[in-house]
Length: 272
Image 1 (tube, rainbow, N blue to C red):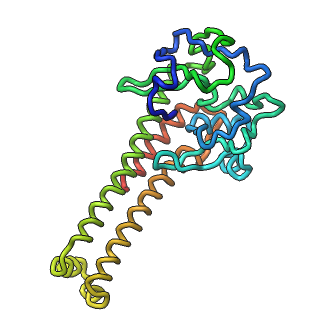
Image 2 (tube, rainbow, N blue to C red; image 1 turned 90 degrees about the vertical axis):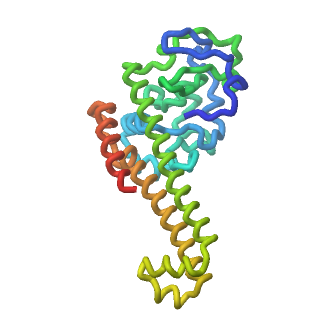
Image 3 (cartoon, rainbow, N blue to C red; image 1 turned 90 degrees about the horizontal axis):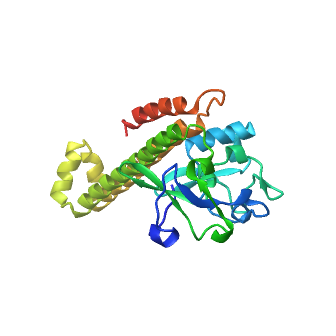
């Protein structure tokens, strides 16, 4: 889930498929680990497949990875997602080398490539201003070979499903806040007689008389704000629980577990 303002400003202007050659080869990054040593903020976002692989690589649960400060939860584009904790560089970097290289997160695996999504799925692009190794020192490599993912087509299908779910979650959060904003604006403009009638419909005549027009209106606005944020928190908590907190069985196929959790999560989110 890389974010950018204009892809032409950070790429070579080309889009690549899995069997295309791209100048991404870095010779194993021998002698260089600058990207892993840097404070990259919250940019190494972890998807469920990354969580599954980290559990497999470390033998730690997702909760243990959080409590040992190897990963953290961050607000990313209105929802909460886990990311590698990178304020002092990556904790999985030892003596300049990645200790979980076989199980490294997707964003690390992609680098210096990125993904750009479209109606049919996604394409790859080459980031030209991020890697410390100059283009002259890189070598051409087939995208699928660079990624080194078993059954890339199956993985790509999963990535598309996850991307669609993230869009769905963000939309659901936005809808809750938009509905609350609409109601709050309605309450702000409501006239005294209409508000009294509204209180009567709710069976809150006594509360209205006790608080009066202004304070009763404020109470409705505050409740709408609170209820909206509680609903948003519930949506985010449900998603985190389904795809991360409840853990994975690393002896079983990830993709089957993901599909089961996707159905489960969508079912749970219907009530919000």
